[in-house]
Length: 321
Image (cartoon, rainbow, N blue to C red):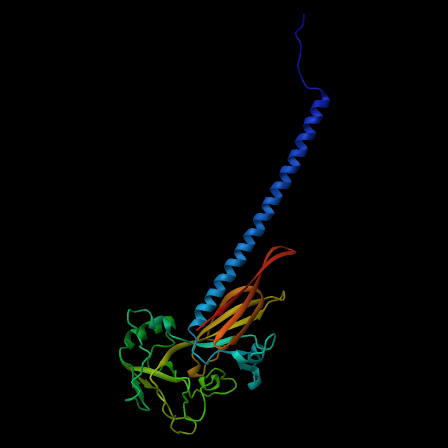
């Protein structure tokens, strides 16, 4: 007698194939969903990281701004080469929600060499009682070390020599450089395209390890003496900085940081020799205002994840002095 034979019927095989198809379909959908979530999460992480790094860089730079030098400009007017006095404002006067003033510019004091030693390399204190129209001493300073550090940071554009001077601003809030005109960005060389005055920021070079000499004591046009009121506190600067959004083809912006230019020498951030680095790309919003010495700014950026899908993030920060 022939033994029994075991096997699957055609109906059973079809049933198993259908079940396997359903399982495979569910599994593939899960895999696709997991991958899409991964792509989105990666884009969100990247856009948050990029914006946080850019915000921290802005905060670090603005923290060491010289009081009274922070302004905003109509970038297109200055780039066009014919700006007027209406094309810039102190940052504290920029109207909320406006679109004309797009940049933030300031002179930064030299915190790098100041804080690189256990005792500051330039003390920020002048002996104003013995100062003259030619210069002043700055006790407890090491200007030789300061010169080396500043020269490295500025790539040789400033080294505290007579030909490559730093800038000094005396810091008393009620100080006037000639007894008539208050300190302002106009007399600090911040708008050389509008006015060439640099009467209240003074180019200096190191005469010794603890004394500065002014590079000029007379107006080059009229030969009249440049008045200087030298007070106890000062800030030393080797660069100004500017944040400039520049439009891309897709309606977004790239945010650039301009640096290593010297307003006390008549430099502008648009000069060809100025250092220009992209800080962050794909910017959709860059807004700012200043109130009571506190700067608040907002930055929004976009990260593309496919042809027609993007993720974006916005961050707001404040810089408190």
